[in-house]
Length: 165
Image (cartoon, rainbow, N blue to C red):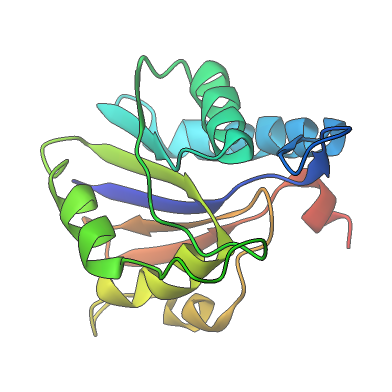
């Protein structure tokens, strides 16, 4: 794998009468703007997008896939820690095994939740990578931390709403 993108699902709203969330209109715009930045970087790479099984992460992954023209798309349950259910632990070893199982792809893009965005990046950084300061940043909704293992760089890719702040 040359690229690894660890992205946090886009901004959400609750679906009326349920505890389920969906990507908001602002979130959709953010993902489109993120795809405009990400697309030229990973262009020509064999790409797969992986999401958790929660609706808002699935929607985030599908929007990115559509904007990037990615045909390979996998919904994978990441046992995410949720504010609604804190009894489910973050399963970093399982997530790492899943990510590494796609080493044959040029780019692996993950759309997941804040807990994984906080926990996963440190497992992929090397001492000789430029951009290590981004490991201290909180990945905001609709944004992404992008590792380029060939150039040994880490970049923080901001979505439209974050750029305006």
